[in-house]
Structures are given as structure tokens and as C-alpha cells.
Amino acid sequence: MTATIFSVETSEERAEALSAAATAVQGGRVIVVPTDTVYGIAADAFSAGGVRALLAAKGRSRQMPPPVLIYDPSVLPGLADRISSDAQALADAFWPGALTLICHAQPSLTWDLGETKGTVALRVPDDELTIELLRQTGPLAVSSANKTGRTAATTAEEANSQLGENVNLIIDGGMRPRNRAEGTAAQDIAPSTIIDCTGDVPVVVREGAISLAEIRSVAPSVMTRDEWEEQKRQAAQSSLQNAGGSVAASSVEQSQAGETESKDSGSPHDDAVEPIKPARQAAPVSAGSPLNGLVTASGAQTQAIDQLRTEGAHFVDTKRVSDQTKPLSVSDARALVFGED
Image (cartoon, rainbow, N blue to C red; front, side, top):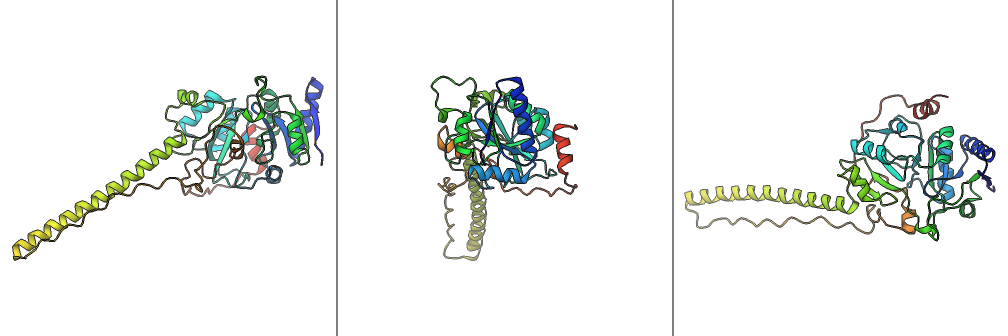
């Protein structure tokens, strides 16, 4: 298969390209589209076969599920569950834009994005062409248009050189992002900022186009991964120390009781209290930990982790109550997230 490249320079070409792209997506095929950051490889989020083809084209496994693009913030409640106030505030402030929010997924939706551990990463792109396509197709599973380990495509030509044999068509929307400074290399283009909103506090999973200062101006409680890890370490240490203190108090009480008995009975000795060992500090994150390397400023590693979230930045082993409602059909799910035709 060799991808067909569609230009969008005229209104007629734009209409033809969008129609062909929508038809391909609805048929379970994979396409490449320009976004407000880089070019993306896209498939119908409700097509398990399309998502599998997307991951195969990139050379990725189900452990790296793709984010989902939506056309409007109003779609958020249709796909996400238990949306925190911080997540809603961030969506209101930065959508459309280069911000991806990881939320709990609606459990009743019958889709398969991979091993998401009950989460979904959502974004509204700030690009008229992409928005127009999303209005026709509904939610799209979209990842950066590149083979794993290579730089994300910022032109249709770069996308074609990497993925042309694995996708149905490519929409040529020119160089991305549109405001790209002259001489800026593709590998220096900032991806979207990713924030995990599934825990008690939001955590930055990937630093990107929207700065931490901008994020905190809307949600002051947002933590970097390093800050979250330090908080977690301190909490673990405090817990161990508190546990140690309780053991020490109990040992002292037992010892004092023993001393009283010894004095009363004329015992020739007093039992010594065994010293409590100091609380062991939490071990640092190992090189093999899933937390290691989640946040990176730029380069190939950034591209490699743009979908890593498995259990979110928090990696908390939570047990969700199984949903007892009847799962929505694909047609019902489509109606829920982008309206009836």
C-alpha cells in the first residue's frame, strides 16, 4: 500500500481531502493528518482494528495506547469519568491547545485503545483542519506520525517517508506547527504537555508546549514528577517512622512492667529494652521502574514516551468497582460523544 497525498490549498481540494479521510477512517483504515503541534497518525478511536493498525504502523505494542483527539471540550464528559475540578479548569483554559489530559475513561464505552488501565488521554487540537475532520469522524486515536524512536513528522513529506507504506492517505497541511520559527529543526518542536489527572493532585507526565508556570496559573496544585516522587518518599518515610514509634512505645511499656515485677519479686536484674532500629528510607526509583524517565525535555526519548501512561503518572494499583451497566454499542457511543446526525 502506498499512501495517497491530498493537498488542501483550495476549498475544493480541502473538501475532497476531508471526505476521503473521513471515509478511510470510518472504514477502519489509518491516515496521517496535520495537527497544531506535529503530524499525527490517526484511526477511529472506536475501531479496534484501526487502533491495532495504527500501533503496528508505528512499531508499538498495546502497552503504549494512543491519545484521543476530540473536536470540542464539551465531549470530555462523554469519554472521561470522575473528572476532577483541576482537569476541568485546565481543559477550560487550554483547549483547544497543546495540552493532553489523562483521565479515568468512561467504563461503559466499548472501545479498545490498548492497555490503558482504565484511563484515556484526551486533547482538543488548536487547528481548524483537524477540528473539521474530527466533526466528521468523531474521536480519533492519534499518535505522532513517526516510527518508534524516530523524530515526529512536521511535514507531509516526512510523514510519507516514514509511514507512507502503512497508511491509506496523508493530508498535506504544510509545515507544522504553523508558527514554527525559521530554522527550527523537527526534533526541537515541543509536543503537547501531558498531565495525569487521575490522582488526588495533577502530575506532569511530559513537559511540552505549555509551560509549568502557565499550568500552575490555572491549577496551582499541579506537581512535577520529581515533586510527586519526593512527596511519596516523605510520606513513606513518615509512615515507617510512625510505625517505629508505636513499636518503641509498646516495648517501653512492656519493659517498665517487667521492671516493676522484678523489683516486687526481688529479681537481681532488669530486662534491657532492645533499641528500635531507625526507619529505613524508601528506596530510590530504579532504572527499570515504570516511573523512571517519564518526564524529559526533548529528543528521541520524548517521542518514545508520548503515550506511556499505563496506570497514569501515579501508578497506583487501584481496584475499580466493575461497571454493571450494559456497555454502549459503537453507534450509541458515537451519538454520546459527538451528537446524533
